[in-house]
Image (cartoon, rainbow, N blue to C red; front, top):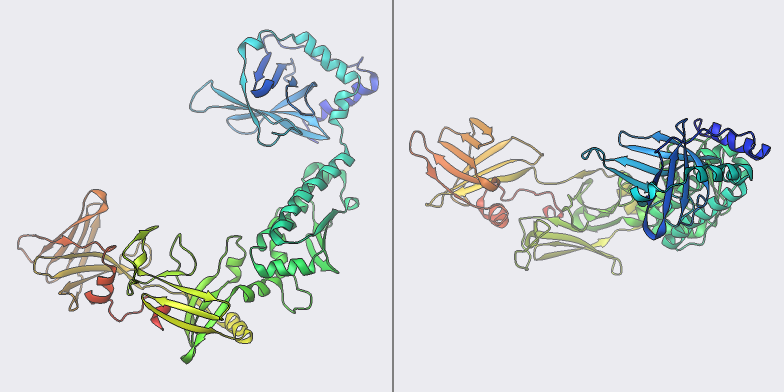
Length: 531
């Protein structure tokens, strides 16, 4: 029980026992009555007593507080928010929030969170009604509070009703489980062993939420068909109980979910334990079973492989999806995904598809290739531009060996284009850099397309105005202009600077990788490197 509310709770019980005659209620402070009104006739009246506590009367909403004049304390929960707290069902309930506006001194917003109402958790915004505040009969409000103390109304509201709480908790757990059953196509039942749970635990934490962690974890895992199949065949019932430590055990179709009081990692433990749960009759845990089911490995002659795999780390994320990979022999590489695109898509500027150049989600779709899986024919089809290569599914034993032993290093280009320009005679000036984010490892190539030569850079100067690349042949100067674009100049020794024409990289992928020269014949880190 909240320590600040304990005196109020004891006061309520005392009033019930003595008929309210011995209760000395502090006087109401003058000019402290405030009425707050909301939609559909909601009205909350609050007056402040001399000891700093308050009397609150709620009407116009379906709530267990309606019609009652409860005594409340105030608690500052942040620099801008004060909450009004009263005793409901054995514990302090925050039912009215007052929030100041840090940017507008003196301005407040008010929100009502009435217990057991349709809008209990969403909250209802109220507004201070100055006119109604002047008409409040504070003596009548005080008398009503004393009367409800005497007849036990407020004592019944404040005391802990365990049977009703148990019923409500089971109903909430059933709602969470229903969602899991719908997602997993199962008909699992749930129960709570209340004998293992004392009143202190029920008042301190939400038993329904914590028991529901296991159902929520199952719902997230059911995005994998393999998990759906296992849950449907192996689990018929969930039994939730409290014990000395967290634990999960599957026995004869019953999943025993044991919680520990105050444990903060119960939700993550539920997911982790489900992954590690042995599957009856399979000789493997759920994580391994999902990994093998969701992964597809295809092969061609000369030990060339391609497909999709699901690694253990990505499986732990609810939004995980398979990662494309390729390899030759015993070396395997994961394919870098194209951001905001499906997992079967990868970018390879060396190849062009038949469709016209079209930018979608920041990517030129003309240079997009992909790996597709055909489960019916048991084939993988790798598309590199206009070329299609078919690979056949490997057997389950080979797939298991590859996924268990092969390291999957992320592939990708080692260097990326940075700037491209040319002069009137068709001489190109090309700058690239290391592919790592923020890399300053620049290179400069100069020459005709297909015959470019690397020019060692003696010095690089970079600032907010651009870059200067100095070589023994001359200096390339990139000046920043509006819109983060560049004006490029070539300065040969002490001669006058010659302005160059910028060539947009995003519109010239094919030219850069196939005709320009520096990247010709170099791998890009995609399946097309080995196929």
